[in-house]
Amino acid sequence: MPIARTLSVSLEGLIGTVIDIEADLSSNLPGFAIIGLPDAALGEARERVRAAAANSGCPLPSRKLTINLSPAAVPKRGSAFDLAIALACLATAGTVPARSIADTVHLGELGLDGRLRSTIGVLPAVMAAERVGIRRVMVPLANAHEARLVEGVEVLPVASLRDAAIRHGAELDQVVVEPIRPEIAPEQRDDEVDLREVVGNHEAVRALIVAAAGGHHLLLVGPPGAGKTMLARRLPGLLPDLDHAAALEVTSLRSLSGEPIASGLVTRPPWESPHHTATAAAMIGGGSGRIRPGAAPRASHGVLFLDEAPEFAASVLDTLRQPLESGVVRIHRANAIAHFPANFQLVLAANPCPCGQYGAPESSCVCPPAARRRYLSRLSGPLLDRVDMQLPVRRVSSVHARMAGDDSSTSTESVRMLVSRARSASVLRLVGTPWRLNCDVPGSWLRGPAALLPSTVTSDLDHALERGGITMRGYDRVLRVAWTLADLDDVKQPSREHVGQALFFRRGITS
Image: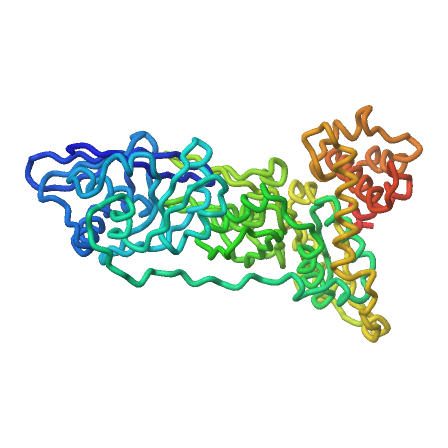
């Protein structure tokens, strides 16, 4: 058959496009051409496919082979097209029935010996195929468990090109090969850290619980050793399990990042803590070839923790301003735009000054006032304005240090149940709206007839706005936190005390 067709998937971010792979066999001089905007890795597929086919006992014909990737205007990147190209070429020679491969999506990189290597992004690729009605995919054996996470799709795992040809009906003898298996990293357990281990800093613990219940962003300022990192590390454990849609999204981001996937979906909120030397591309994503998600997208539905936040480059911190508002990262390149979800909770930790000792008891700060102001001003005003809660964290005294953290009421498990109840209350109140958490509710709705609070409740907040102590965005964020406090206390609407406590959480480092 001179022309054979099959399917594969091209990914831009988490968005996949099904690609038609057309192979034409002509009687011209032997050659192998790939057209349709392939990148360098895909252009090298001709050598991998030819060697893999020969070493699998089903060599390609010594004639001119032309591979067209359609739609031609869509950029194609990576080596996941190898399997589809090889089977289309074998179908033109009659080795593989063309009808068998026509309605199957093929994903996988070929080794020179014909074995299939694991491929990144298999889960979002299979999800893209399922969305357009394709019900059969063939993937490397190492990615089978990942592909099977998508319901309603028949997954054909194969270890080599020869196995793939036999599965499609090629009359070849079965040859047992040792499949290439990726290393599976063990899943991190949430019970490694527990909130009951935290002693003292009751205000910070309370702020952590409020942040978990409402999905609020948090800034912790305190000297070294005050427990900022210890508190932040316990936040993911306070969050409820991910629902099915969020679990699919988080697992897809992990797959696209090349991280190992366990046997099932990721059901616990992720934790990302990039080093302060991270670049803007490392923070939000990028790359010269395939656009990879950065730390912010990988933290979606979880926690992004920036320790020593003032040490990050200002340009890197400011890249988070737009994702904090929209919940989406958009990376623009000359020939592509990649979209990644970025619905994360931001936790910032900072020292009060360059030496870290300002305000610490029995310690002397050597930083002049100008240096202290300059240090914290590295966190720009527009970024801090998007942080709902800003709180000082003090070192634990010797009295607290001798106290045993055995109060089960503050254990991670018990607080997670409290957080789940508070979130259920917000979901019930917001039924009929596109929002589920208090952190997502716009100020126009909070100040509208559906949630308008009496002036006697918001009097302190109104005075702070009139005096210029907070901005209008800060006003709305205080209202969001106040509603979360009300949900935690299981009352229908915030009281004046709730609004006052929310205002304290907003202005804690300046009050």
